Length: 559
Image (cartoon, rainbow, N blue to C red; front, side):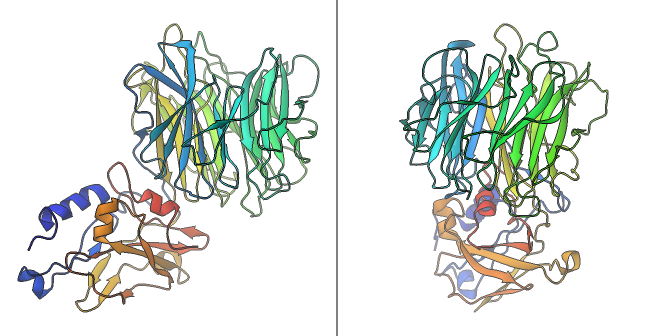
């Protein structure tokens, strides 16, 4: 009796290829008589012998845009839904033939944590897109100085009132929603530069009206042409980083504690020498600072992290500084990238993010392996102790691309990074196919190693066992078991229908007391370890898309 359209061996090969892992199954006597098919499967990790404990595991990069060659996408922005964590919204500038008059902002959405993407259309407006979720699940976007709202995770958009009226020289706009648990949660903030001055205003009524912009730099003229990131603290603090663009140049921050009505005096971070574009390279570069605030609830909650690039006369390097929670000063900036000093290899466009536990992730464009043709890769760095120390640099891109050259060469002003717990995602412009695609890659950085030697035994009942990690991490290590039916796995082609079969088991094994699956069906099992607050992964598939990534981000077993 053939239960599936293909033979079971064909089905097994398909699941191996698409889902990854080793397989074990139980054949009852009835199976050997070809009367019924009962199939119990274990998905165990095949990467564990390759990657050491705690070493980040990038998922192969995917192309976000689906357009034919010819369009140029730059300046990606990312936002993660607080209500549906595997939902990601991405924006980028889109133009044709290096003609800025054709620029609009393209929107894409992903339901599987950035493994696959689809476009939901264009937003009228030019340059500097930004996107931000509020805590209620409403997502906001800006396209230049136009603001849009989506109540359905980026599927459709409604334009709100512009934060500004009238004309005048304005640049580098940014929109952010206060998604904290602070007193001004839900408030929208908008920052921009104008004639060397920096301004912030806000809307407390969902972009129906906006306050008069407040100048936030130190006064005088000019002070800064380079506003950096807006960021929100745990108690609705509003931070803005920027470059003071008069001698002596330095990086500074300002902060508001009253919901954007006023800002304190600028706080100096450290000196900067602006990274040049032409004639060093053909495309525009920048030393704009990137900023992220810890909202983990831990001992560093309320602290700030800042990264920027600076020029030393022959190469650009990254500098990192942090501000401890409460009053005080920024720490002296330190070199962040770990390639050899003086190798004349540039690091540009850093972006920083902090995950819900307080882990710090930084990504950037990197030339360390450039043989002299302008080759660029995307690299990253992680700190697990609030910036006190950093792990080694590592690449997250799977291929290099060449820097743009010639008239109209442009890669935008920024790349993007956002973080879940134990996983982060980056997005950047890539020029392998044409003048600019947007690529994204997710990176697992679980601190516990993956489960090994998973076995299924039994006939009338099922026992799932694995190698205990007590010897590695101690007797306090516990385990989660996720399971589901093979027919659901096949039909859904993912793990969205999986269930938590066991949570916080003290050790191996797990005895599955559920009824034996019906003829033609079976169960699969995935297992991870936990040692609060650390945890491991359910495993990685060796193919793209990696269907298990969404399970690592939003597992049915609740911590």
